[in-house]
Image (cartoon, rainbow, N blue to C red):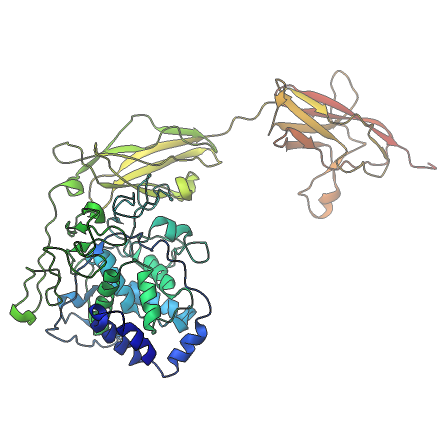
Length: 600
């Protein structure tokens, strides 16, 4: 461990204090053999870090207070240094968010105990990425009340990542955005994992992997941090794991500062009562400085900063806060937060009022288009559900998140097999759902559009799926002119009868055909009670060998071909007729010759 300390000291004075605090906290609880065990585990490489988990988005640069005015009181039964209702305001973690971090750390510890993932590390990342899900603005299941979206990754000050999820997670059909409390980019959540299947996880056991759910996102983040056989009690592994989230030394120092702060004690606060950070700095390639604030009801958008500024001007790369962003450790959220002189008083964060413009003004959703939607089974709907967001004065509201949802039983799906999708209204206040594909079954269902985080009435769209028209066939012909013969009591050759169906000279795929063994009455052939027959493939017991002389539900394949099931014979000899018909008038008669057994 001494060697590890020396390596960290060489990185520079800017991170020495933080690194030493974290390392001391880690080594205090580790056995002497921990480093040897870690070295033995470092056989696999860490995941590639070409694209950071959050896509190089901006992040909150607020630092924890330098002094603690009141040490947290250990609450009976809470454990892990968590107290209830005491300590600095910045040490208060929203109840559901805190539960998600602890649950994720426990799950990772059970599957990968050698990683030694502390839940406080997840809390540090969650603080920097989303301000603990906007101060705990989540529902009872842990899903954010409003989407938490990063800037559009369009290459202007950020990485360029074109849309990979059809807007399923971020509502953006052109580029990706980091989403959710832990700010995963959609491509990383769905298919960017070390094993090629994506980091998405189901942390609350509801059968879904939702990056907007803090339980799911925390578990996914924990697994990522531990990937590559990392041991997070080793400083180099810890640094690499954090930098994999965002390639910035300032980001690393900011996360480590909160991680260390939380390890010295936290307490639980009600959901929605967490301290809201206000300062954002550029991250990754941007170096941008975003001065927008996230209020309790404001839409979270990292992308309001000015891209292209040099590192150090916007809190990125060097750890130096931008001009006007005095992120002194003793002054949470910058200046003007209510600290007493000298940093000894109880911090009183100044609440950020809800902005009077943008999505906060939305009071109503208006349906665009009068007709209900319809499509044929298995095809795409020609039109998509569309609504316009309006304020109390009837004016369009831009930038408002709107969620389109349909029941899972509907069979229809949005891109990515999704049943819900969130779309942000454009400059005209319009939100249009992605292309909807009908299921294979006919029926009716409803699509509901709701304003995310607002109380505006939902808008319902009726949708109908029509059955596919039956493919037509006006001609049937055998594919072989070979004579069909068999001996009484035996079967004809396997797949002896193959026919081709066409309609107006073209291949008729999926055409329905009926096969019947008929008498030779030329005026009115009826089903023959003797001679060749089929067997019911679904029959069981004594019925499985029972003769069946009419088969329905036969269909041609994609090439218009149909091979009839095996044909058996009884003890009657002679020439028999097999009649094949379609609903469109095609008729084909096939002769079956049955010879008497030898010596009869």
